[in-house]
Length: 167
Image (tube, rainbow, N blue to C red; front, side):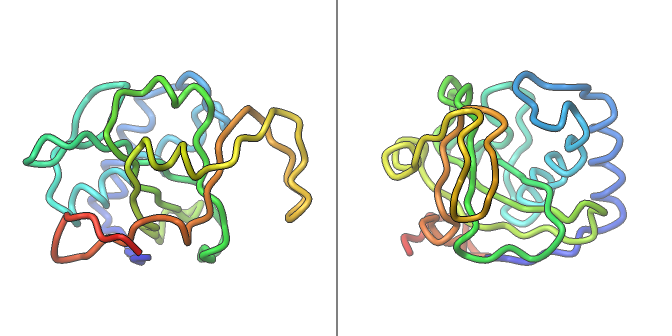
């Protein structure tokens, strides 16, 4: 897990783009989390030297053409490795090669890049939950059908390289 303190420039870019975006299909927060989601993309882009893609299927791509969708959750504290990374069921339709997961504090003062995983491996390892189902481990009631995987199951990201590292 990599902790990042975003620059003012990164935060401003995320807020501006987030305001233009509106509410995306399947958005749990109805657009309120846009700035955090885009900040996750920006921080990953800048750290790993990826290129922003303007598609609904993926957010970034590498110089080797790997298509990456960055999934960022809002949070109020530093994540633990047993916390889960989620993808809403409509994410199955996204044409990407892998996911990178991040968490961002609500005030955008910190972002944690949690790890990465190929799309097919994520869906093989993750657990499916139905809307309205209650997670007995933490009392959370799912707001949509989704797939969850603990942070500890993600592949680590090396800061000096964009190559996958199995944990």
